[in-house]
Length: 275
Image (cartoon, rainbow, N blue to C red):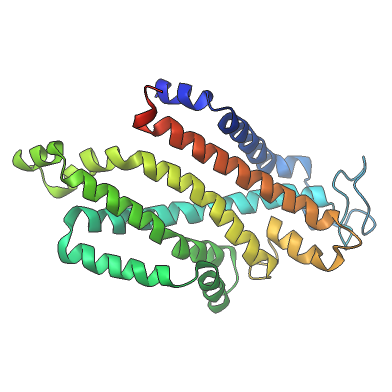
């Protein structure tokens, strides 16, 4: 673990991304402390430019944009993390079963995975949220459903590689059952690519959520970055900051997550241990 941390620390962009992500997470947690009135409170005149009184300005209803961005970070990060966790669990289960058991199990599960992959993921997410009631839970569900196939294919390939290794064959000879082999030996040796891919999936989930919120396919009573951009797109020419500030927050967060993901890939890659 210490060696992994040292290799990660040597990657300057990854460290910058990590601390940027920490700042975003802290800002999200401290939002109720900094702005106890909430993000929907009308605190001033509409379209006040960024100033010392209102750091990020106000929107068309006179709401403090800084409060909206901080509270939006809470919602956006929550959706990104929870939907990614569900997608990883789905992909891990389906890909793991397909890769380890092979045969008709592999064929059946991969055909299902290919069906999901043939559908454009963003259009599929729009369809799911439009069919369901546009709530936080439905957005999380939609993002998870469209995100798991790449994880399933990755896990399948890792399990296919692992099941032919000598230590797995030795476990079979020793009389260990399939689940013991999977959870004690195969899965721990495939966690590195799963962790890296999962971290990058969080960034993708944030972008999908922002797109859905921009289109109005989310709970209107919940503030998110995409929701702010969507509500401010009609005044982009006269009040640029309404869209620019949450847009920059999305850019910063997604970039930080990608930098951390690349740093984890370098740190966890066994080929780089002697680099």
